[in-house]
Length: 461
Image (cartoon, rainbow, N blue to C red):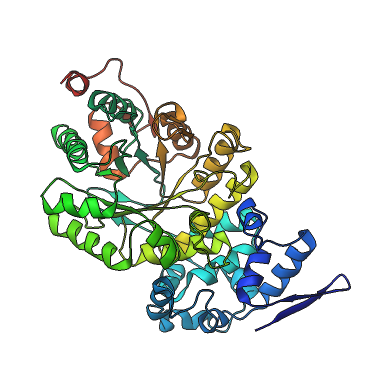
């Protein structure tokens, strides 16, 4: 189907919905690399104006990736809830934007709408929204998940304590965990990216995390971010796997590049559930995503990278995850060139994920060869926290010495909690208060005058 519009005495024609979506996307280097971006700002505005008039029903009739060739497309179409979609089924993309920004679009109504939305619909509406629109609507979304604590409650901001080490040294990891706990980090998860990805090493890391959590009675969960196939093997050996991890993408071909398909994710989900390690809930999956992953494996089918990212959220949604993390600037400047593009992408990802019903977090980060710096990350952190993000990263000194990229530090989490009066997850906050780390009455974190003896054992044992 052709999409046409006249703007400034020029007639623009877009060959199909996939082309229109790509041309309407705010500028980013990945779409330029794929040669699908708008030629200039005028064409981009024309595409956005044309997209605003597209009926939402069209996204159910015109798939961007062929239904017969792609299991992610089949998942999106087959599991679409027509009843949930009905209240907005007469809207255009522009109508949907206006309604989302209205007072009528309450938190309760947005929750009822989740199953009726497709990734393509939420990606489309994000393309005609300003940053402030993305923040305002996302703030109205509330997605709550539970394992050993409760993430996503209003007035709360959680963190992943990321104690990575270039040699997986257990003492170094333990020291980073202790450092993070003293700053009130770790309620979302204590999660390690392993430097050595063999089952014996993975087992040692998981046992260390399990020991720390149970020895000090910390109401949190652990994860070693290995491939789901390894996670399944570890679970089958009764190794203490709390959250099952996997990186995911928005097409079958891109997931194949990760060595996965939906059947394998289902197996991992069932394996984690079978261990029954949660105490207050059984959301057992942890997924990571990032704009550009499908393009980097030449598996984007000519679809713009932001829409491909939103399609990954349909995969995540199927397995009721505890955490979903967009690692927004990690892939590099080939896909998000500078701080401005990273900030926009982070707000888009959070908005789209929350509308689809996901517990979205963000690794607010950049690689050292990107045109970005820590001031850009301060801006994105502050914007996302105001938008109600579920969790962020906490890393010693904001510099991941194993993965070699820049992200948010333990102190950054302290800053944003103090600035906005946000608290950790309630179970974790109570534990911090018991340890003398969190002073509840003042609604702020403070350090004990000296390290409690029992924590000293953490890095001496």
